[in-house]
Length: 365
Image (tube, rainbow, N blue to C red; front, side, top):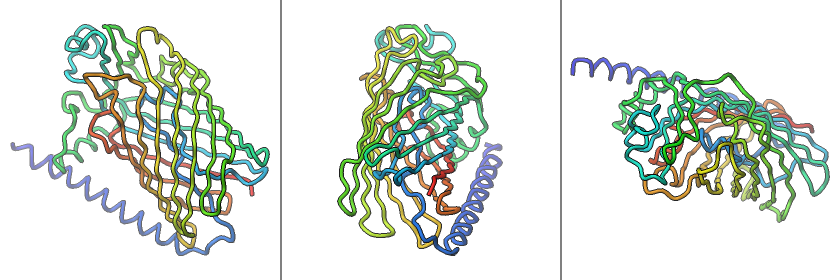
């Protein structure tokens, strides 16, 4: 018990530092919002942030968008950075390096999973409105998985509010390992973080369906090519296809609502024989409040049905929910920056515990 007050003091100090940073961010946001407004509306739409669970990131996920298309003959570039801390396991853990021990308590046809990692994902996006009815685009991600540095912060936050660590206390802090096992065979066995590597290239096409004043609706399709590598957890090794709908509703000038729905059909991944998967369905809701000036506040929540089939063990087949809140600041009429914080809303250990999002979006006038 002698060490408990010291641990509590450290946690409280971290919490106070975080509160000071939040106050400074709010003060800067108020200062930015007081700057002169532009003659044109800056970039709008949800944060272009896909779900951050490392196993789902191997496959084709939803990239959130507004229902609008770009202006005619306009080109848009985006650079997005997402950093997430994840600890997830199907209990009991056992020794994750030994298939028999790790799988000992599970039925033969059940998946076992262990994820302890921090993931950096940097994406470069290009979108181009080539005609009145068609917009095309591409996304090239770059990924790195490793032990990271946030484990102590997450555990301290959980301790401060008396929340469960979900088994984190059983693993060394800032350790790394990703394992997926079925029938005593490893589908994923990653024990050493790889260098920053390119992931799977995604190609997209989007067309408008309806525009009725305040409400805008569009339909899109996407394909993920196998340019990444399962060995480095930068891609599944298979080709995935996706159909999606994007809707935007503007009831008044300052309020914007976005809804996205996507269904991804997964191709056979590398070493996929004996590891059945199902299609991924994703739903997103986003709320955007736009000030008179350069600043907008965003809150969005993403719901994912993951690639694992029905399971008695869980939590791999259960619906995952994560939310992001942040701000968008327009540097000019063509350039804006995004900053957001992501938190898991489900208690099933199939979403990251915390994530950070930043993005830069530039488009031609």
